[in-house]
Length: 108
Image (cartoon, rainbow, N blue to C red; front, side, top):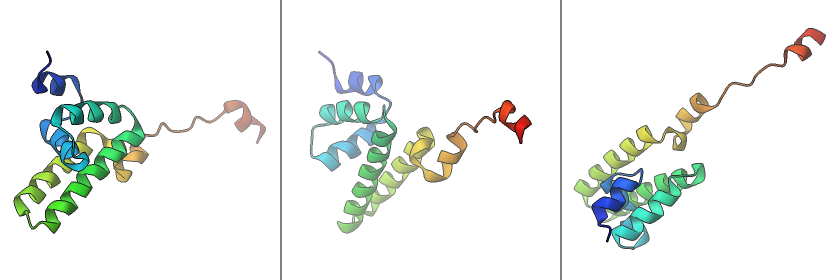
């Protein structure tokens, strides 16, 4: 039988990221690890995970839980550093420059 630690080791997320997903979706942490592992495999899923963490920050702010707000802001920062595609200022650096067609250049 797999433990939570086993599932966490198999996915590309930290324990705090999985907890943020569990809180956002209202599901157990084991299910959140599975969902997060699925979402982190796609660019749109990575963006969804970022938004989940942002939603959790807003909820913690609304509840006046400053400690949770600070914790989640660190989680968000670390998530963006490990998954730069989900941050617009990093997306340009991830795109491969277009190759120029040398045959077309010689005709111009």
